[in-house]
Each structure stands twice: as structure tokens, then as C-alpha cells.
Image (tube, rainbow, N blue to C red; front, side, top):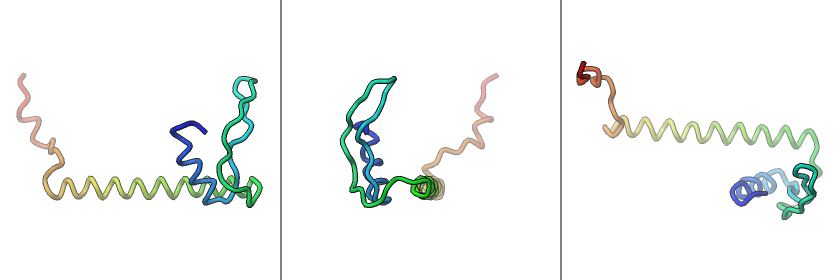
Length: 91
């Protein structure tokens, strides 16, 4: 795991109860990475499908949070309104 993606990789490993990390290959060079999670289950095609489903759920949750944030800003008048911007154009 990289320093930035390690957080989300750790969360996925914990939720899916698998172990990630270990031996990786980069351009044919072997590199040992830290192990993340407990290996309760092996990584199988079913676990990969669960990971993809978790990714979709996370995306939809963040999309919903973003939409609510934008709607609240618009409702209280903080969202920029571009509807009248065309009247201020100098030709």
C-alpha cells in the first residue's frame, strides 16, 4: 500500500476480512509491502465482487453527501448564481 491509499486499503481489508499487501511486483522487481488486515478469508472472485460492491456503495454515499452539500449551499444562498451573468458581459 502507498501512504495515501493505505487508509482505504486497510478499511477494505477489515470490512472484507481479508489480508492485503505483502509481496508485490513493480516492473519485474519484487517489493515487500506491509500486510493489512487479518486473513480470515482467502481472496476469491466472490471477495472481489464484494469489494466492487463496497466501492459502488461508497461512491453513492459520497455522491449523496456532495449533492446534499450543494443543495444546502444553494438553499441558503451561498451557491453562485450564473443565470444573470450574461447581462454583465461587455462586448
